[in-house]
Structures are given as structure tokens and as C-alpha cells.
Amino acid sequence: QVQLVESGGGLVQSGNSLRLFCTAAGHAFNGRPMGWFRQAPGKGREFVSAISWDGQRTLYTDSVKGRFTISRDNAKRTMYLQMNSLKPEDTAVYYCAATNQFHDGTYYSPGDYDYWGQGTQVSVSS
Image 1 (tube, rainbow, N blue to C red):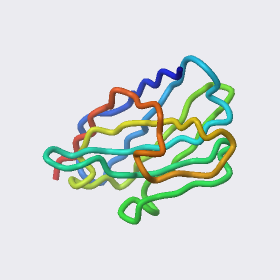
Image 2: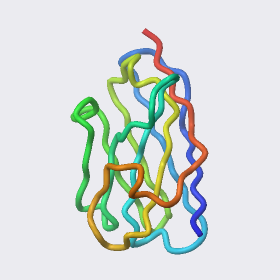
Image 3: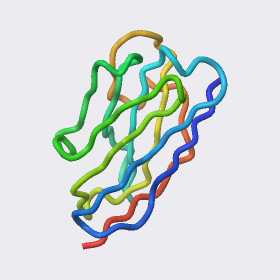
């Protein structure tokens, strides 16, 4: 079992930045590919970014490329999402997720993930 806890969300004005944190407890953070998803009111869960177990490979949805950066520190059992140049359309609950597919790739489908955090709200005003 892996327990994931997100933090770092908040209310910011358009153009500003936030850094999200996802801290893991439980079995084997290292070796797991991980990802960030978001869900806006009335919409489905959307892929944002993913990172390989060693941090060497990353994946982003087109709408955040060049603005968001995913990273991880396995020694601290923490994954990050640096969000710059935020836009009102980035407003959503952001979730981190981890997969059981150890040491293998990056994943953009929610169905590939086995563990989820409770989410942190990000609100961007215009």
C-alpha cells in the first residue's frame, strides 16, 4: 500500500506560480512511475504530467508544456509540480498518483495508476 498526500494548492492570480507537493508513505516510493492529474468542476479527470521512476523521463499534456515542470526526490519520497504562468483554465483539483508498474515507463491514463491522493485545490483568478 502507498499513501499519497498532496499539498501546495491555493488561490493565485493569473500569471503567478504555485508549487505542488506529493508526499508518499508506505511501501516502495522509489521505483514507481508517478503522475499528476486534475479535475475541474463538471469535467472528467485530465492527465497533466508523468515522471519515470528515476526522474529521467517526463511527459506533459500539451496545454501545460513550457509552463509546468514535474520532478521527484526519491530520498525525500516526494514528487513536485512547479506551475508557472498559471491561467484561469488551470483551475482544478490536482491529484497525484502512483503505479505498481515498477521501473517501467511513464503513463498518461488514469487506469494505469493504482494509488491516488485526496487532491489539492488550485484556483487561478483572471
